[in-house]
Amino acid sequence: MNINNAQLAVDEWIANHGVRYFNELTNMAQLTEEVGEVARIIARRYGEQSEKESDREKDLGEELADVVFVVLCLANQTGIDLEKAFYNKLNKKADRDHDRHHGNQKLL
Image 1: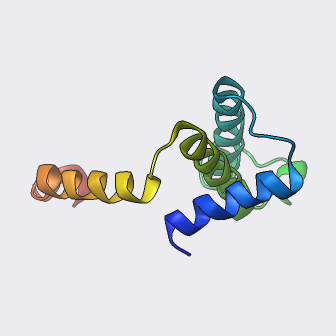
Image 2 (image 1 turned 180 degrees about the horizontal axis):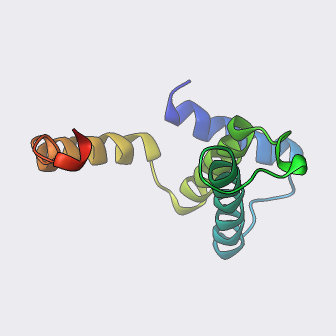
């Protein structure tokens, strides 16, 4: 699925299952909450924090999908073609960072 199709799928989901999009500020708060859930899993599963028993059943993929869903909501409601924006950003980063990390001793 490409990003444009994902944006359409979210829009259809909202039309069929939701009442309407939450406003942008609510979605921004929701995004922050979802990113926090991803951070909790990463910190406990891959970082140095001990993983609680209740965290072991958490699905990182599901939490990442929650983040993507809310990002797609924000793109839809603000009129952003996220696929176009993504590829523009990828090209910008390629031009800017092509040689940037090759000499980084921390990465060798």
